[in-house]
Length: 427
Ligand code: PMP
Image 1 (cartoon, rainbow, N blue to C red):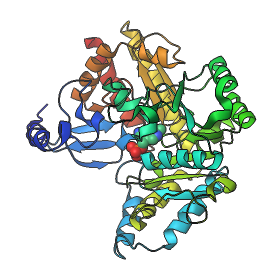
Image 2: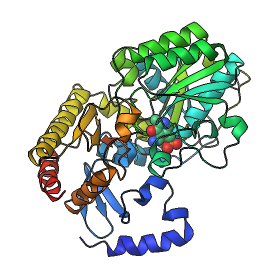
Image 3: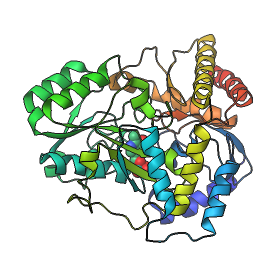
Image 4: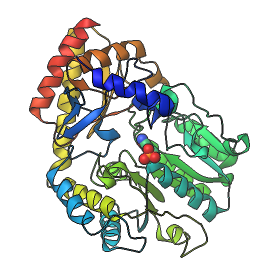
């Protein structure tokens, strides 16, 4: 496969941008080799600057649930941008977006728009701290909530991929306020709350962990956390930046029937534009400035073009049967991959939720962070490149979930499974 132009761009980029990229996992550091540079994208496909085409299972890391460059999203963006790119005063699309989010996610009685998932989570934690008057928070090993200081403690995603779970530059005094728990361990959570529950402002969790590959909650686990938080006056925050509007229209909280106090969103609600949001119980959200004293702001927050892209995407995913089809296709892909691996005699398993999945080079089941870490990453890296050569782009890390969109249909799944058959054969 010719990647001369990507190589030339990466050479220039490395001299000017740390690692040549504006977000670490894009650099292919853990899988080896060099990233390709995108020229354009359409539906389920990415096209690079050398003219290669890939079935894309990253989807810009989540936003492109309706496929790349969906005509309805592009039309909404084009129409909106003609009226101006940013106003710095309120605009009607922000109200429409707030109505859309609060009607789709009933636990969000009020919502505030921001510009990224990172902003959403650090704002939510500030609300939890401000509202409770407590300082400590709980997060889970392998969960990633963006790069805010309080979250770079035993984090997943790129920090895990690169082996940097605790980042330099985060003051110890702040990191010490972040307590961590093993995901899916009922007793560890009970013990920690018994010891320190009355000091914990907020507990933040990816209800389905998508940043340590893809780990689903055990039966009753999220309910257990809900009860502990209620009992100890701790604000329960579901970080649905990845799962929101994906694993069900109303996110993981709808899928599992749990009502968090606060939720964070990103990715899909921007339809590919830089957007995040946090929302929740009215009594908590009313404490945010200017209605309350907890400060949070943003020059470009509620940007009209971003709202237009997000609203068009939210409209597409409300089509009848959208998430059912996504779920069926995710199963078809994962079942097919498992069958191909087992036919080649390779220890391999998958985890899935509608529109997202994990690939593991080990026997199942995978239910904890330790299970996920025990996947054979060397094998994954070889498989990743064997798939890339065959025109299939998987997440360039053994610790990132894969994503499907409504544009991934039988043709793309067939191509992927044929590629996988050949790729497993090379391992
Ligand atoms: N929370 C979760 C669950 C995420 O997956 C991510 C990003 N992958 C973030 C927060 C941070 O979002 P952003 O990259 O938009 O800052």
